[in-house]
Image 1: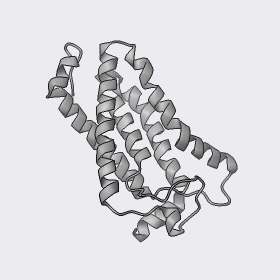
Image 2: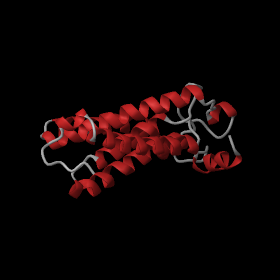
Image 3: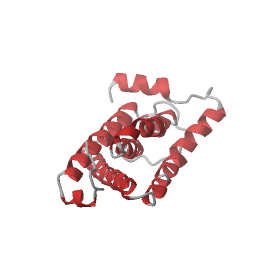
Image 4: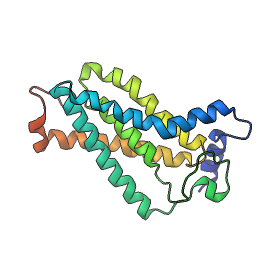
Length: 186
């Protein structure tokens, strides 16, 4: 871990002086906001072919993101802040690898794919709703002391890149047959 990553972590990580409500909010974002976010996909399944295409894009991006992040965790040695004795840990967590953050990876893939696979005229609305949710999930992990900021940033990048790959894959493969008619995929 480099000194910049540690310094940034210490700027974001909750301290003993942090208000209890802020720690409770971060715990809620870390533990429950991702479940709520995934629940937002369920109504889309019932809103017609365009919305189902959007859900397919989200699932594809999230699966790809999970595979990449899992592979990195298995091959790149990493240590969580609390294992190093850096900062304060406000969330119980195992000492397993934390690079990249799976929470941040999945949240970013979810947000980016919901936005990218949405109808072009509505993408800004999806971005306004989804990006803050993904950021809250990712940053809550640093605030609670279970990830360095680099874990979050790489997770977010993986989520964004896999969304681009998912869009390319969906538009150039057999998945295209499930796309609604006259669907622009860019």
